[in-house]
Length: 473
Image (cartoon, rainbow, N blue to C red):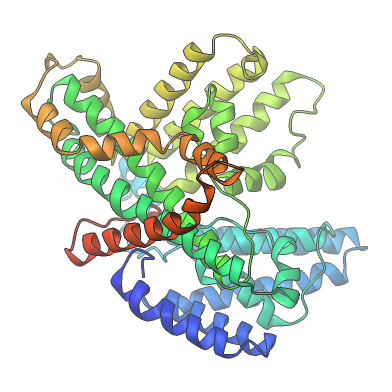
């Protein structure tokens, strides 16, 4: 069930809100509503997979209890952690990577192994990472073990962050599950955040998806002019940002509606001047997860020589690439990010204050090239599309399609580029902090949000293209 769907907006969410606020007198009943609503939300697409998620929750609940009990017995604790990792990563491997592994074996040997058609459970990467972080934090004593299965289930299955994050740490939400307080301010801010995210997704991301999908379909296997290839790459660059940041914005807004505060997951990554800075701003919760549970345990940057630092970065970015999908394109995409970040660390590029424009152009060039590889179905398609971008297929430069797409969607391109920067945030701050017309904004801002919501609904009712990239993860 997509947040940007009529079923969610006009049936699921209103019913859950009514039930939730009608039971405000009891925290236990409110949490019960959220847990069953979350299980229903996940079961909507494929009912059997909710049993898989509940099984994962149960086993990790037991792992946390055991590791808390035997923490002082190092060998026993390490054994429990090892079994926990094998279980969680094994589950992820079977559903996400087994078919890919068998395909590689078939391509490089004469084994001819039958490749099963394994359906990927929605959001398995996210709820698996939530479960691992919970057990690891209990072991490290970064949070108290939860002895009530109900609360562990609510933490992992909570529907606003279940399908696509942000990846919330248990120690940041455990207190809120027991002592949060709903307020009118939280609810109203949450509604505004949700509608803003909905606008990002429905108006900008979906519009860019039409262009990107059409051009990538033409340019992956055939020759298209360079201008058209670049237009498709830019469209996808905007699509994936507003798709995922829009979903994160909606998740944060939903959390506020129910009294929860989630951390931000995006911070205008397209204004970055290095790839290192880009990954501090893009999918912040995933970056911090790999930092805290992979990079730091290996020694991070605090190692005796740079060789080990490079090794640590390599491992992190190989895993980051693989996490995103079972295809060589994701591995190559991860290695490109690794190479750039490693070079920036070696030459301290991220710490210099010179050549701002040049560094920004470099960062966005790498990001766009990376997204082309990320978007392609395989390396052959990626290679052909990149060749089109740089005129290596004798494909020429101009195309009437370029002009047609640019003219038809110019408003959405402008909106996408403008709202990729902090301009709106700064204007909002200026208008709130003592602007001469701030009183008028108290009336016009809610009206603007309402009009944005109506516009989004009109697009959804018309049945406009409504894909969601991160359902694949």
